[in-house]
Length: 126
Image (cartoon, rainbow, N blue to C red; front, side):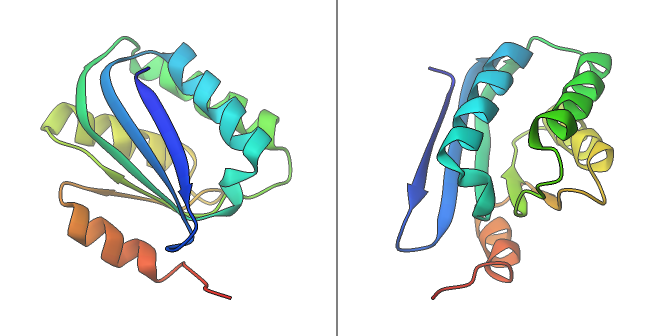
């Protein structure tokens, strides 16, 4: 499976790992699972450094961003820190972040420690 996710109850973070070939269908299936688990309520760390191919283009990504707004309705997902490796993936992640700006806060990083530090500001431990 190219996308996996799990709640880290100690850190109060939903951790997602992407690897290999990623399609819009893969992303959609993952988001359906995230919504069902209510994992969108937790800040998330998305490790996409293992991705080597995106099988979608920017137009499909734009449509996906619009579909997310419909799927989540008035719910505002918690912030996400996305870690990527490579200029193309950094650009696509920044494009997605700009498409959902004002609704979902997304930070794009090339370093896990920096992503975790940014995300820590949004984690509330009760």
